[in-house]
Length: 244
Length: 381
Image (cartoon, rainbow over all chains, first blue to last red; front, side):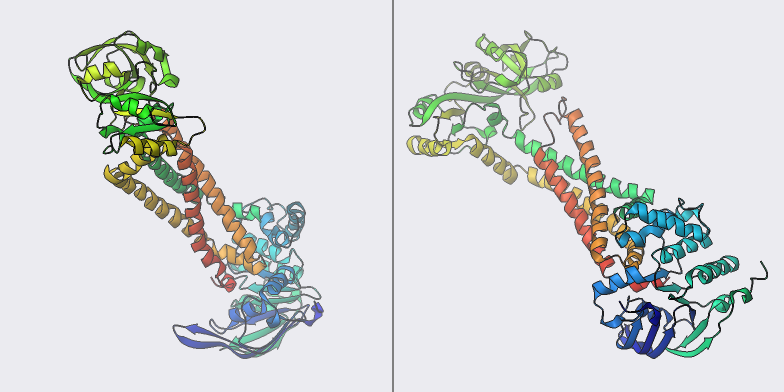
């Protein structure tokens, strides 16, 4: 694998879908960059192509045309098995609905990516508990998802996304299902724990309350990135920080 | 990923129990009906099973099953004995009779008359009280104990009881466990001479000739030789049993009757198991998609689904067949209409294979949904 310092770079990315017999172009020659060590926020109205873009960056969807370089790897040239391996070892996912396995405890959920990568359960659980401890859930490791609050469930999902120390973290609307305080706490955790040198963090969000956590905001509309704003805001200046 | 698969399967206890219960119910329904069907068919060969010493059955050419015997004259026994390859041959007689109860009413019995001299055809190995040699005593009969208890509840199960069969006085010399007769009549064994007397037959006193092929001789070949030399119909025991069962399937209506019931069991089973397991897997599509997004390969996902399917199939099948076996263990030795019925190994294995295939088929339907699920659905609500 090439250097992780290269971040995510898309150029002329195109993707269309058939919808009720009509070919609909969702990405229209899009250009997008996300750098390591930064939290890049992808914003825009519903249907503008945000989900399609992160699905392609994650290797879950192909593109019709264009170039995509993720962590130094030409992602569109990888076969299915290589993509699977790439996701397993180098990408972490945080989903809007957490997507935890309901029958597994918090620690077991967090351990899943490690076990899938071949780590034995005892070692995987040990690392999972340590990760949950970092996220303030050290006392909740044995609990099932239904025994946790929404905010705690999302923190478990973040722990699962980070436990294998990925170079790319993709977060899809991580605060959409949370109240303001929980959402704020989740974004704080992402900033303080997920963002580190060499790791690319991309957060898709509609939630204007969390825009201020971004180092860079890329605004999409109608299949294109129409505006990029570099913010480089210090964590101490985030709204709500002073209200706590 | 075994732990993950099991957690996904069992986390919703109500659905898990419903899944296992559905498979258990289907297994119970199919195995019980198939076992009753099998036992009923098997009972049509009761005489062949009972006279296990003989490996050849000789009869008139028009005879197809035990219950529709067309008695022959006694001379046929010597005709059969004279055929090369026949070690011995004895007469066998059977007829329906009536036993008068103490209240004066009648109960039908199937009287089987075995050779007076050798007692071949008597249930020597199945005696539960007394000895088969009791038939050497005048007017002695041996009753099938289950049928006796069912039809004559006012008579004690005691040797020495006197009964009247076809206006002939008989003395109970013993009790045996006989394979139940097709018509459900109580089976009574006695000597051929007494059986003939009970039925008041005077000329045609041999229903079948039972014979034994000489050591090292193929019974099928000997049967062919008997047919050629005597003009009678001869079958090996195995061949005769197969023909009887085939006749029952074709002409008795049992195939249609049980076929519909078993088919209903299969249809209900497929509906319950298929639908429940399919819905279970479909409900888990998003969780599987999440695993695929994380990097779990299709092979692992397939393994997880098959593990889930196999586990519920094995547990459900064990429960269902277990209940069916208990049913036969409880009712089989009894005196009711289910007496003599049991769960054959073939039905046990067949039901197991069928249930597993059914679960795997449902599994395949859902697997298709899971494997073709776009992992990008994890980014949708």
